Image 1 (cartoon, rainbow, N blue to C red):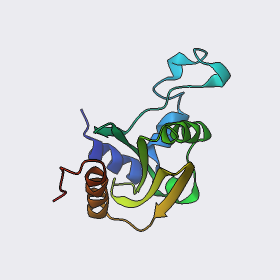
Image 2 (tube, rainbow, N blue to C red):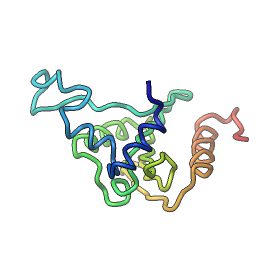
Image 3 (cartoon, rainbow, N blue to C red):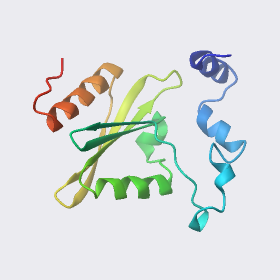
Amino acid sequence: MMDTQSFLDRCYDAGIRDPAAWLQSRGMGAFGWLKGAFPRGILPTDCDGEVEVRGNFLRLEFKHTHKVRLGGIPKGQLYLFNALLKTGVFTIFIVGHDERGQVECCRVMRLVGDEIVSELRDPMSTDEFHRMCGRWAESVDSSFTYQ
C-alpha cells in the first residue's frame, strides 16, 4: 500500500497539482452512491477535522492554497459553513496547503455578533497554524495554556 506522501509525490511528478480535485473529476467522490438521497442534488461533504472543547467546535477544512486565496470553496460547502457559524459555537479554519501538504495560508471564519466574518491570514506556516489552533483552544477553555 502506498503512503500519502508517495502518492502526492507521484501526482506532482505527473503534473497533477490538486490530487483531490483530480480524483473527484474521475467520479462523484466518496459519496456519489448517495446521489438522489437528498434534495437539489446535495451530496455530503467530508469533514477534514473537527475538535470540540467545552461545547465549542473548531472545523478544519484543507484545500489547495489557490482555492483558499481565490475563494474556490464549493458553494454548497460555504452554505454548510455559514449554517454552522450561525449556531454560535463553531469557528472554521480553511487551511491552504501546497502540493506537499505544507500550510501556506488560512481563512478564518467566525461569528462576531450576528455577522459572519472571514479573514485571510496569508502567508502562514505550519508552525504558525499550530499556534493559531492553540490560541483558539485557550480562548474557549481558560484552564488550558498553549505551549
